Length: 265
Ligand SMILES: [Zn+2]
Image (cartoon, rainbow, N blue to C red; front, side):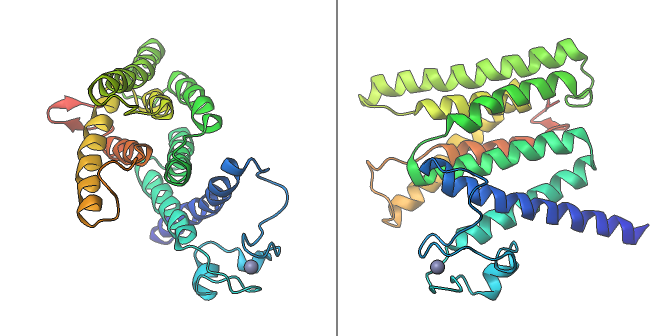
């Protein structure tokens, strides 16, 4: 039994690695308007097709020491990082929920967060093509998967997720308006509003509040550190999507337990 328990966890991790590999493809190709399936993987520098044995998550990057086999161009360590993150997050979900509907739905959710975060870092844009369908998938899952929010019937789940969508979208929209009045420029992109609406759809309104709390806290601390290290300037635009994603992962950690005395379904 112990052996099978371990095998299952390793499989969940490998499953996450494979989807992390796909996330890398999305992060590179979506902003460039390219197809996600055709052609197969290519080196961004020399365009050479990457054979399957050079496309194995984590391992290929390590074996090739982060270089293309054909042109020796550097391959960003981010490919490795995205795969590792996906593997670890899938393993985490599997340990918590087993192989269940909740695992599948939340795996889609976390993968969307990873893709959106890195695209936001690269382009300062959050792709509608991920977050708008995400709002729908989150809402439909909350409604249809009976164990999604503990001790709620379908009406309760629809309300909890629905209020999450509007709380997420509405609160950030309001912060954006206030920020615009205070700083006379756009403080919050429209993409952030839709991203938090998606987070609300999957996790419900209480988790939206936890997400904003952690995103604001981590966003301020990390921005100050980046400015102190002279990696960013005071008036540089700092994408907020990755902090919202980080906040959502932390909110997910409290799902099913109490956060400062408040039960998070
Ligand atoms: Zn190359």
